[in-house]
Length: 129
Image (tube, rainbow, N blue to C red; front, side, top):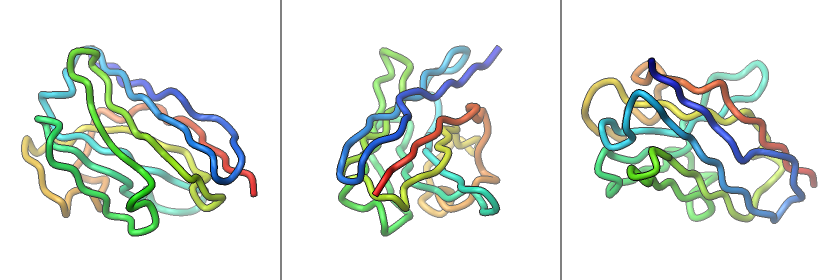
């Protein structure tokens, strides 16, 4: 049985940092390319960061997070991470991790949640002004 669980969210002040974790069981992070998406009420899920199955190639489709967010994975710990620095109120959202079911790593997939599966339940991040 595949389980994916996000953790590490919370409410912080603008300018603070958080590190989100996504722990998997039943699958290993080095079997798939993986991604972090985020969603706010009434909007589509937005791709935030993607990483290939080897943990080497990364892509950040949202210009708003470039230079502030870093995706990484530790396959020995079955965990995907999202380090978020200099958080802004507009980063407030529910954050989800997921696996790219295509078996490959394509930057354009990172902009479209339809390529992904094994979604976690999400973790809330709130950033106060």
